[in-house]
Image (cartoon, rainbow, N blue to C red; front, side):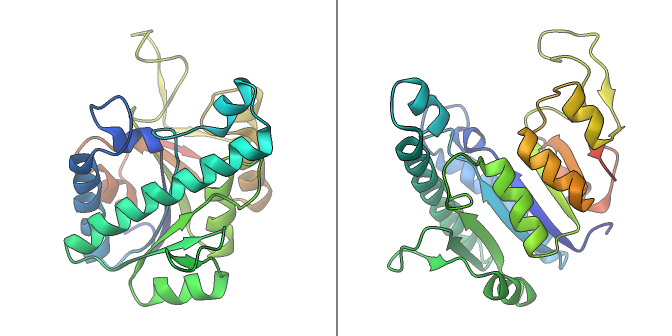
Length: 235
């Protein structure tokens, strides 16, 4: 295995499956099965899941809501997704623990860096919920932040396309997939891999980011092995 401790970033939209909204239990089961392969290989894994399937703070703010209130709603929505994934993992025998940046003791553990590392050392999948706990920061930035705090080897961003392209591959069949990129190129060319704050934080700390297609069965374990199925940024 190329990596021994991984932070996997999953979009909330990925949990919708073919539905238009909410959590698709079949999709949760699919992701859980993919994660089990990593767990059985002895890889320490943490997750950050977005909330686009339920509520986006930016969208709420664009509609006239106060940005802080809207972002708080988005962070709470990530807790819902995280609890769904925890349930899906536990049902197939994979120990998992949700840790929230917003304390809600009756629902999940509050986030503590040392405790999170202990969970990983005991082969539990740790699911970081509620973003950074602060408005104006996306779950992309939260993923990079948590990866740095737990000293992960890489952030793996799971998407529906097999890497970063020169143009939208769903619209332009001539778009070319990049095998490797540097952080500065991503920022300069506005390649929309993740938000600029997350990319900048990764660049400052030399944390690699691997972008790949999660919807292809077996791709998560292939990504951990270091196979050429996506785009490596800063590696």
